[in-house]
Length: 266
Length: 211
Image 1 (cartoon, rainbow over the protein chains, first blue to last red):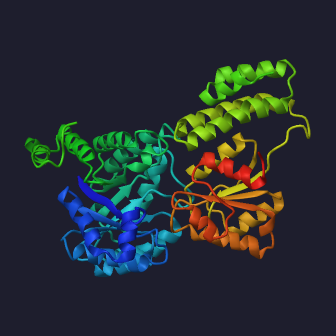
Image 2 (image 1 turned 45 degrees about the vertical axis):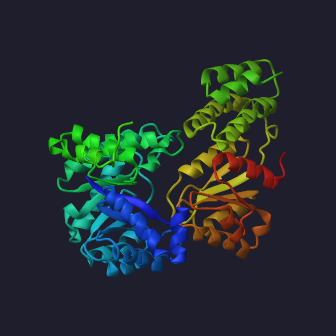
Image 3 (image 1 turned 180 degrees about the vertical axis):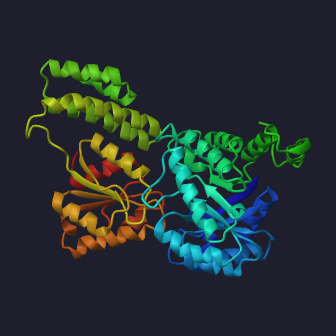
C-alpha cells in the first residue's frame, strides 16, 4: 500500500499562511511528520492561489526536498505549474492528476511524458462525472489506453475512481468499490488510488465513515491512498485491514506500528 | 385548516403520511396555494434551517425534498392558471470548466422546495449561456457554483458578461462552492454568497425582499 500524505494543501489555512509568508520551516515540519508516520509520498497542492500557483508549487517542492529525501505528489491540473515543479523535483514524483477532460488531457500529456513520473488518472469524463461502476471502468479503460499508447508504463498509472458522496446516492460506495476491483482485474499491474473524505460529505461522524471506506477499498484491491498518515486511528485501520487480508507477513507492520506508538487500540 | 401533520411528515421524509395528508386537504377543498405554502414550503424552510445548523444531514434533506415532490405531483392536477405563484425565477449552473454538480443539485432542490422556479443549465455553463438564459427567462436570480479553485475565475467572467450585455442590474447574483468565500463574492461583485443549500434559500429570499 502506497501512502500519500495529504496535509500540505493550501486549502488549509495554516498551510496557506505558511506558503504566503515563505515559512519553509513550518512546511518542512509538516512533511517530516507525515514521513515519520509512514507517508511514501508527500502531496503538495497550492491550487487555492490561482495565479501564484505557478511559483508556489515549485517553492513547495524545493522547500520539502531540501529537508527530507522523499518524492512528492504534485497536485495540480495546471500544466505550467506542473512543468515548473517537475523541473526542480529530485527523483520520480507522482503527478495528480490527468483526466479525460480534453483540455486537461492535452495540456498535461506532454508534461507527464517528458519526465519519468507516476501519474494519477482521474475518472472524470469529458462531459461529466461518472456515477455507476460501469461509467468509471469505461473512463478508466480509455485513460489507460491513451496513456499507455503515449508511452507511460501501466505500473506508473494510478487510477482514481473519483470518490463521490454516498449521502447523495446510496449506491455510490458500492459503485466505487466495484470499479476498483474491476479495474485492478482488467489491467493487471495498474494501480488504484483515492482520497477518502469526499465519500462522507453530507454525513455526521465523517472520520468513522472514511475509515470504514478505506478498509473496504483495500479489500477491493486499492493499492494507494491519499490521506492524513498522522491520524493514528486511520492508520490503525489501514494496517489492520492489510494484515487481515494476508498482506502483512508475520503481522510485522501492524505490530511494529503498535510498538512504535504510531497506531493504538481504541 | 392546520397543516402540522403534513409539514411534520415532510420534515421527517415520511412519504405515505405526507401524501395522505395532501390528499385529505385536497379532498376537503382547501386552497391549493395554502397547502403548498403552509404545508410543503413551510416544512422545507424548517429542513433548510436545520440543515444549515448541522442538525439535519444531506440524505435527510433529500428524503424531505422527495416527499415534497411527491406531494406537489398530487397538487398539480388542481393547479389553475395564475393561481399558484412562484417566489421568483432562478437560473442555475456550474461555471465553465467545472463538472461538479452535487452542490448545485442540492441548491436546486432546496430552492424548488422553497417555492422558487429553477431553470437548471446543468454543468460547464459558458458565461454567454448564463447571460442568454437570464435574459430570455427574465430571471430574478442567477446562481453559479464552482468546486475548483481553478474554475472560480469563471464566476468573475460570467458577472463581467452580465455587465457587458447591460443586464447586470436586472438580476441578483448568488455564488457558492467549496473554495468560494464571502470575501470572494464581494471581490467579484456578486450579491450573495451561500455556504450551503439551506443558506442559498435564505439568501435568495433576502435578495428579493421576501419575508
